[in-house]
Length: 175
Image 1 (cartoon, one colour):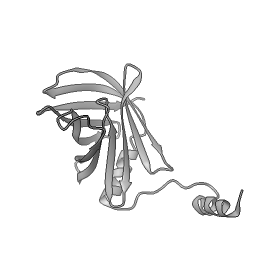
Image 2 (cartoon, rainbow, N blue to C red):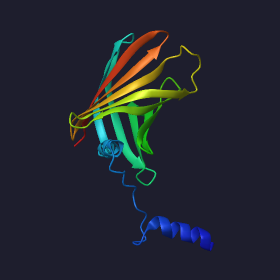
Image 3 (cartoon, rainbow, N blue to C red):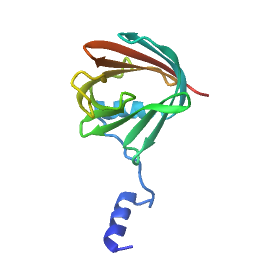
Image 4 (cartoon, rainbow, N blue to C red):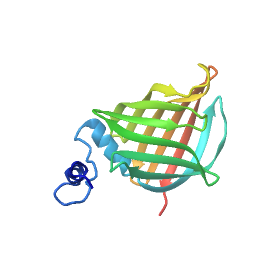
């Protein structure tokens, strides 16, 4: 291994020789990200659409930390296969999320309100990639509500063709 690469690895590893998981800064966004990272594990629950779309059913979710602690991956699983994936991460002082949607586009959201005293994080739309047309359906917001260490709800706000819908996902940690 060349000495520059070895030096970089050792610098990242720290004095213990073990790669250190990133500790979020003690900011409102950092504290919210820590709360999200605590979701790591397997969950089960239900989804229910309201508004322009109506459907309901059961789903599973899996959360895991990646990127040496710098990102949380959320897989929403229907019929045994991930149907949507979101990745939460810090970007400086901002908490962000990219949603890889079943609508085959990728909205990017940013936490616009954090109220951890009431267990709530609100994400607002920033921009989107792979939108097929200006009126194509896409997620344009998300509300995360921590109801306890083993209970969380996600309310995805969806818009398309001039109509709005919400998808409420209610999850409980599998024991």
